[in-house]
Image (cartoon, rainbow, N blue to C red; front, side):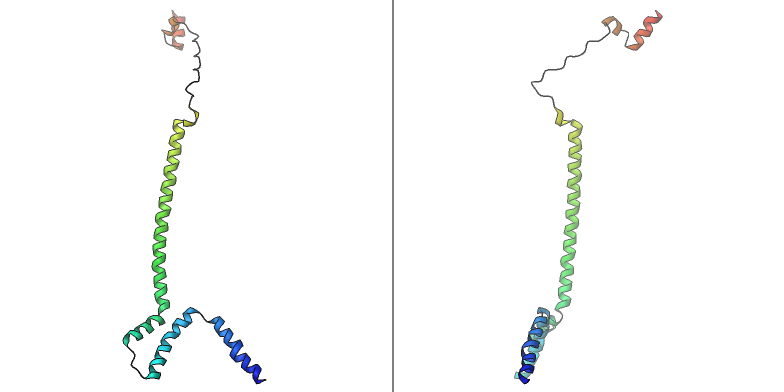
Length: 141
């Protein structure tokens, strides 16, 4: 029965504690180790170690501030990339519209024969009066 209790405490519960252990908890525990070591050996603690201990204790705040700074840069970069992509899309759209205006897809081949022009149904005398109004003028004369 004592063996089972020792197994429970020294193996099972220790394994569960190590499972829940994170880097954050280890870093938060470092200043405690420094203080215990300083009091145990009765040596004075330099102020640098105390500042390191404070920094490690407040590392969550520093990491959040760092992440906010990085995220603000990322959003700025994404804003610029989004505007550049929109500008490129508008330029491509205007370029395609410009090409369609020239109708570059249906160019005539160089060796293709020209279509014969239809012969006019009016003689040269009728054309001198000017199209439809020429017929009206002829009717009055």
